[in-house]
Length: 395
Image (tube, rainbow, N blue to C red; front, side, top):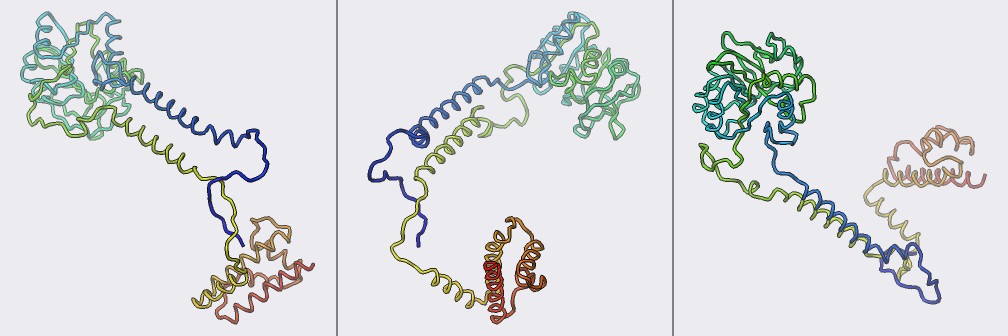
């Protein structure tokens, strides 16, 4: 009897062919191939990392990322509208002093709302709710309760009715008397409100997604943005400073460990995982093919069968013993009956009954019936199964 073990491949004694085969060529060159694949993978990842841009600046007229508004700014300039990007209240006030302008506010994180409120004229506040009570007095809001999706204006504001549906939502506004609300929210509020205020008209929009480079070409987003901003007057577009002041915000905390990590750290982790996987594959295949090796002691098959039978008897495992007998008999009988390996019980029983002349019910009970309840029944089952096998073999 033999067993199966794994051992390194050794060259057989005697003469053998010296010409290389496909298998031997692969064994000799697989290390080079794996190293080449690793080099190519590292090069591709390096190109991807070198092409990464810095963080996007949402609704920034100079940002070309999906969250930026570079496309909208260029459309406004193409229509003859002057767009001035400023990052301080002082710069916005200086621009307002030059004439009638529209103040577009998209980020209030680093600005004082009271200083901005002194700038008279039309205001368009998009997405940012900080300081809204000062910049848009009388207006109440509930941020984050309206799902951003395509909505119909359902109002009489020309800028909205001419644009039609727009991708808008996020915040529900409850306007003061005399205000016009558009793009209704489910709870009765509006996602766009416009009303007279501060010597001009203040318009507040709950979400600026319709102004981004990603969404501008959808629905009536571009038309709505151009109608609200492109009134022909110069636009003062207030954005967050390129280098935000440190410590100016109340409750500012120190950066966490993850914020201090380099932006490319995740790619380093991915590269390490890939390298470990390739190394594991390479080292895991270092053994040769599986070969057979003679055992130092010959064990008779009958002794193995008897030993297993004694174990079944000691544990009273009649069901498991019966299942083993039946499974072995079915595996041996199926090809002799001309049936495929996936033949069902009905096919096997019908073929055996036709081949041996035995009662189909008796054959089915023997091969697929309930397990025997005692040792006598198990012996009788083994005898009957052996009888069926011998009949099929003799016919």
